Length: 155
Image (cartoon, rainbow, N blue to C red):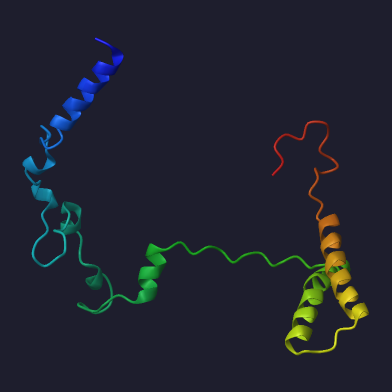
């Protein structure tokens, strides 16, 4: 038998068994009782929940609903407040102002149809480029100076 005829025979078997059902059909297995949900829509209580008191009777008046802050304190992690932002020096503040101020002025002038002389456009574009370059140069993304010859993993 040639390899081509073997392949043709395999395809014929695949096509012939296309409409046959699989031997291990999940529909034939019974549904586990623990998966059944009563008509009310809520799942049955777990055994450890049956031993506990309901939450609304834990404090205050019986039958009173717990306050939202009580639930929030127990259910959610509340992170500590973040540290204050570092104070930026004058050069950094001027660079950020130039970075956003140049394009903002051009956009505002175009929307308000203000006359834009060539020197104004040049100044706005130059301030954008200068602010960008100043921020990149001051970024300080290199390794620390006191790290030695083997600084390991730098994060």
